[in-house]
View (cartoon, rainbow, N blue to C red):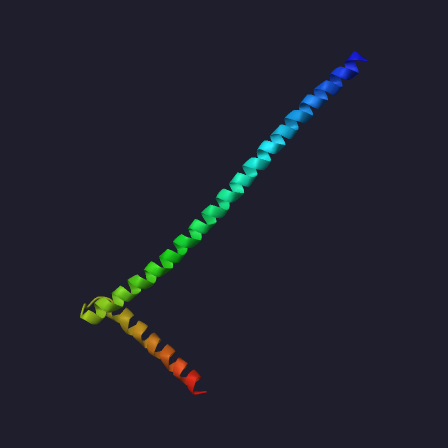
Length: 96
C-alpha cells in the first residue's frame, strides 16, 4: 500500500510540474506572438517608408535631369513618356 501511495505522490508531483511547464510555455507563446505581431507591423511600416523614399528618389532623379544634369536623361525621358501615355489613357476614359 505504501508503494502505491508513493507512486501516486510521484505522479501528482510530475503532473504539477507538467502543468507548471504548460502555463509557462503558454505565457511565453503569448508573449512571442505579441512580439511577432509588433515586428510584422514594424516591417510593414519600413516597407512603406522604403516605397515612399524610392518614389521620392525617382522624382529627385527626374528633377535633376530636367535641371540640365546629363546623367539619367534616358530614364527621365522614359518616365515622362510613361506618364504621358498614362495621362492619355485617363483622357480617353474621361471622354467615354
